[in-house]
Image 1 (cartoon, rainbow, N blue to C red):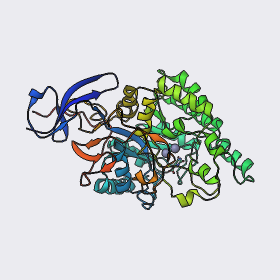
Image 2: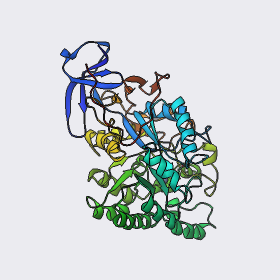
Image 3: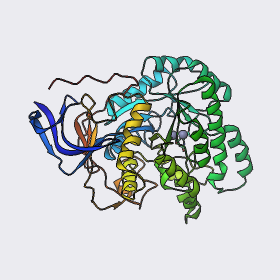
Image 4: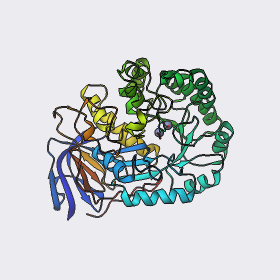
Length: 453
Ligand code: DOR
Ligand code: ZN
Ligand code: ZN
């Protein structure tokens, strides 16, 4: 007897759609096929509904430990679940930063106790923790090594010497915030007298391009897997076109770079709106935004991650130079992408590639990202394909900071049902299985053999 059978759903993979029953047992997909497969404790009738793998968001900044009043594992993971994200990979610029085994274990404890979705934990890179990095990577615990080439929120920043040492002496996936620190420092000096400069001029595309160039040289020399976070400009894409299929470089794009532009910040009636969408790397020009969409559709981008980086509105309403960078996004990624599907900017199959299949491949999560026998039962039933769009309201948000840069934008409703490990966590945006806890994901954990049915 199965725990659950989802009947007659239209299953969407990165390449196909087909109608079948999905049978769940012990948190895994035990059988996919016809009704004859067996009986279950619970049946969900899903005829006419689309079923896709849960979203894997490789890039969130939950704020615990350190700043739980901005986001903790409970609020952040509820936000994730509500928006169809069933696995999050958390960045290390918390307080303290995740630089040692003790830091990592502490964060793991907080997540295990509170996270409603599955979670992985990045280790941060600094000049002094290369041994800790190798221990955390060799044990298979950390999901990757996060490297800040340009300073952003938090103290993590590596100089070029440390960057080279990381390539030479560490093992595992390097995830990089690629902005060139020397250029950023020089430009900051130039703009300092201006109380409200254009953030896209203070941290321009050239800073991202310089860092990506440096990374390409290092990957060429060391043939080491690198994941470039938040690619946001045409110049970066141009550089990456040449390395595609040649070097082991994967790429991430973020919804805010696809949906927002610097013109919106500049034209906003209040300086506050501008600072709300202050983020590193900045939202870019309309030309860059169009180039990024082309990159998404031409396979120059592998994954979409939210770069969920919540800050309080009170912090965001400070003057430009004091307002922190970053904005919440984990719960709006999928609604925004499904809205783009309705607008024919990309296909639903491509969304499944970018949000599920490719993150699972890049991060080595073998039991995630696809609907197949033996896989973890992390999946979504989407709302009716013709459901009217809904303008996002602050009151819809689960993030502790309670606001979104996408407020007022009409988008596809949140998934009708969100399952983590075979258990219902969220329905139509509301949390319904608040007792569900996610599990740690580790790169390379072997795919399970199918449970007997
Ligand atoms: O805008 C950003 N905010 N960029 C980052 O790299 C970090 C993030 C944060 O943690 O606030
Ligand atoms: Zn970053
Ligand atoms: Zn980030």
